[in-house]
Length: 111
Image 1 (tube, rainbow, N blue to C red):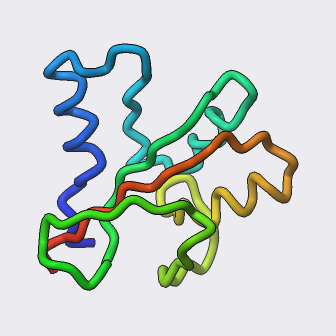
Image 2: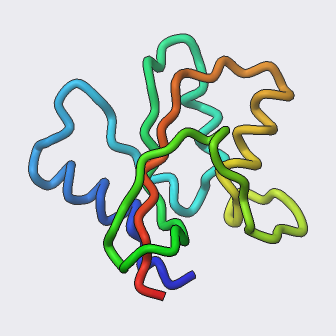
């Protein structure tokens, strides 16, 4: 989707440079539905990193809450390989999952 796996690159950088002290850096790129495993009382907070079309110059970023945005991704169904994090969070809410505070780091891709 022209984002070159920005979330994966951020996780790789954190792990390779030993920056993951006191938190887990997890790649959910291929299986976003695995986010459900982290929606529990033990998780203090979550920061999701992904490409987002923000109408900004490539590489610029913004922090926002899931409830502050709406997805424009068209999905025919929710699968383990193609997912929309906002749809996953909505599903989790409807299923009664405990949602810790969540922040999204949206990075403008060079599209």
